[in-house]
Length: 328
Image (cartoon, rainbow, N blue to C red):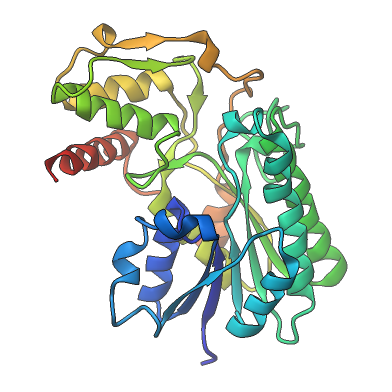
């Protein structure tokens, strides 16, 4: 069997770290691209980097920036990947309203640069693009399918819609093996602290231990299709093991409100949430998408993928991880 060599952008992120673990377990050599500014922000993969049996043998990190085409080409030449997983980029939807230009460059133009490099490789490369449910925005139907029209409501959603369509063009026009994973919200204990689920889990743990006394949130009625990041990276890998590139919705098919997440999190630590949670309208998005929930018939049938665990399991996993962190 030919060597299995993966190149991951965004390897230090939530998805990148879980994907790295999965690929290493499956016998891959994994190369990751990290920014110079990430040298102090590698906590999610530090356990792998410190493993002398892995680092420098089956796991390699390369400094690079998604805006630097020359360096990206050099990394491709050094790694000679058979699979590319493009996960990097500013992914906080609310923040994209504050920094729209850099968000669009990282999520949109960087995808174009990588697709061009992949197209120029002598040996065929399989390419995964991390798309997002935010491409649907004011969705014309619910649940959404792979064929639902894109109507994004944020700069991040617009950039992802552009990149998703680009991936389709490169697949159809150049015969490149490209798959779009249209992922709905997926969480884990490794979620960034600026995301609402991690913010809630973190606050529930600290308030239960008397370290904080309140949690300020935006719209509690916002609903999302929340799944487990560990399941979603497995879907990414399965897409590149299929016989051809395609687009897939990756979701649970269920929605829960921010209020549901709050109630579940604070119930785990036996704290009455209504006494400590406050709402601030300034935290609300300028434009809230309509009911985003994915229909997963295609990925279940084609790739035999399905999510594991329940919504309650996900919340418990995150809160218990925060409680454990407070012990250290």
